[in-house]
Image 1 (spheres, rainbow, N blue to C red):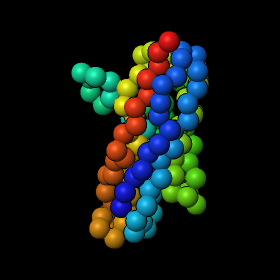
Image 2 (tube, rainbow, N blue to C red; image 1 turned 45 degrees about the vertical axis):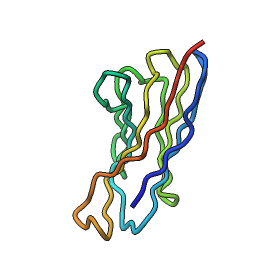
Image 3 (tube, helix red, strand yellow; image 1 turned 60 degrees about the vertical axis):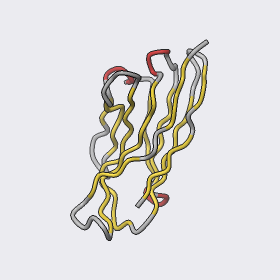
Length: 120
């Protein structure tokens, strides 16, 4: 099972970016899907998580600006980021809790990370 993230880049403050992440491999089902971020010298923090049914959870710092969504038919999760601020600069990682051939009880999978830089 692999997660492939894309969509990062350089954007000016106030701008927008959309991150995408697709899971592939011998997947039976996917539970929670989410995005985390890690700024230089800091720990990896939750940005948003979307369960397979249930309540979406956002970090307070991104509420009202970021929107997480998923497409179960494509095993994909997305993060629409609007009104970006310099403090949103970080490497963004997608995460998924996946039941697969190799993890029949469910496993924690991570994408490779995509850099988001907000700067003028």
